[in-house]
Image 1 (tube, rainbow, N blue to C red):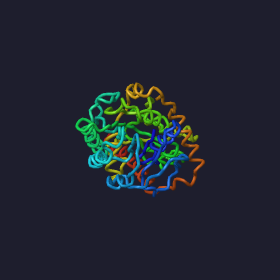
Image 2: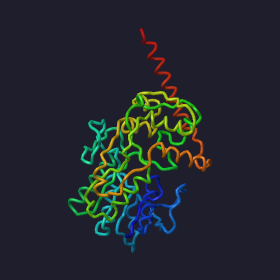
Image 3: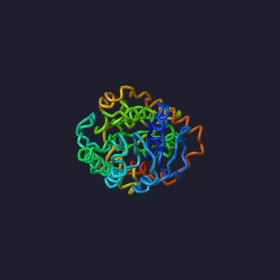
Image 4: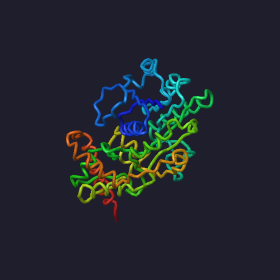
Amino acid sequence: MKVLYIGGTGTISTSCVAESVRQGHRVDVLNRGRSATVRPLPEGVGHVAADAQDAQAVRSALAGRQYDVVANFLSYDAAHAAGMVEVFAGQVGQYLHVSSASVYHKPVRRVPFTESTTRHNPFVPYSRDKIAAEEVLERAYVERDFPVTIVRPSHTYDDANPPLPGGWSAWDRVARGEEVCVAGDGTNLWTLTHAEDLAVGLVGLLGNWSAVGEDFHITSDEALPWDEIYRVIALTVGVAPRLVHLPAEFLSTLTPGWIWAELLMGDLGHSALFDNSKIRRYVPAFRPTTTWAAGARRLAAWRAAHPDAVAADAATDELLDRMVRGHHAARLAVATLAP
């Protein structure tokens, strides 16, 4: 089976490309090829150079090429989704669109999430754009028999990308034994998924023709409180965790324009548990095996092996420090109101 990945070098897509190669697929990736990556592609993977956001450029770059399946990791809004329908309608047997589990209803009304959970997220423009893209593709399936399958990852990480607000800056702050601010009271349950586990589910849908017209989330079954997520990091690097807390709605005031503040309000600040029975019915091989404790050890090993791969980010560190100062200022302000 010949598969084209649009993207192919990101946190999730790199693992999916590797899993496809492992399963014997002939794989190409389409991207601009301009960014250095810490995630090298497997030997034998072909490269098509094009701007994935330009539908005409994609069409031109793929002229004369044929694929059984296209998996698009770089489609973010309705206009782009519509452009991809025009490029690939009648050209492929399956078009897999990577959406996001952040589309599910916020504030959370009921867990676990299933694929039938209402899509509604007034807090995060990214999520609203993903919903709009899904709606375009669903209409194309109904009206034009466009062979779409929709996949919704949740918070997915790999060995080179810690799943924390602030990334490696937050990880290093924990490792230095400094205070780290956790949104809310740290008890909301959150699901982290290693990209290699997700890849088994996603690749199992490729060429799975009964999955056309269907949507799936693909996540781990392990849900941990955010305090425990940080505590595991501290134990992994051998320090005592120093966690402080601040309501999520304060963060947008403290860190205006920071993408993580938006996500904490509209996504990470809520509990996220998933019913994965649907993906298991379609892909029986999907059985996540990487716990967060194991994933944290893998991240620590990668960090030790690549000390120069992630440069210090002074701006992010200042935002994280501002959150801690916000916690202490809020405690002091509340103390002045005490009788």
